[in-house]
Length: 284
Image (cartoon, rainbow, N blue to C red; front, side, top):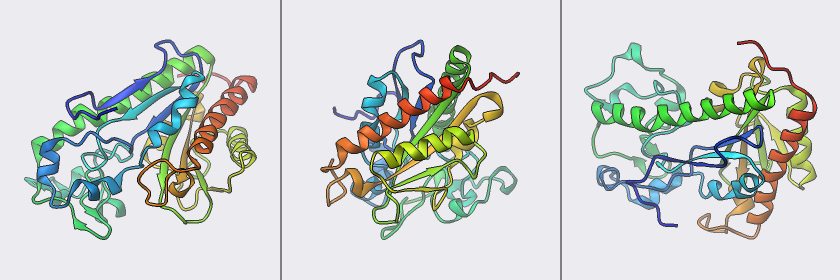
């Protein structure tokens, strides 16, 4: 399918009325590069694509066919990172500069991987100049806020129907970092322990080595939406790109089908455990 930059910034896949308590988020696989974005970059599209979680959106198809609802970003991460707080940005990257009190000066933002990425390893600075403030505000208003509002609405709808809901936030990570799969729950804060254990067991049963919270403990998406006290759980999934891509890390490889089965198995097992355990609906 051809990516057209004028299409909506994200896709919703699944029935209008949920048939599963599972909602899937894919915030970093967008490939709809606007001409204006490409002309503003001092690096080529191939370098910008290094920021992507390449083809992770395609790993969710079995899970959505089985009933999960998915929200898949089309806007590329180079334009705006949906796994960052909208204030997590280098103030000097914007023109006129943002007031220091209005931003979160995180190590990620300082390192060039904040809300608007500014550096790519091996390629240096991304942009020819600063981002106009009105363009930053447009990206937040048209992409970031609607994406998170849609996730929130879907999770609440699933929770209200089934008594509980769970968000699987899907990502990929550079090859060769250790375990094939890293699950993140922000150190025990975004998902109930029994659901986490079910996820760990399922990934291992699928034949993958699994780590927990190291080196990725979960980002803004699971931190914002995971509220076990309100019967909404969230788990970040990082998949080694060597697991499902070819040797060039460009196209689906021989392990692609197994990675699809993994995401589907996690969604199915967590839905079954979530409903079978009767996790209570907490009072608002």
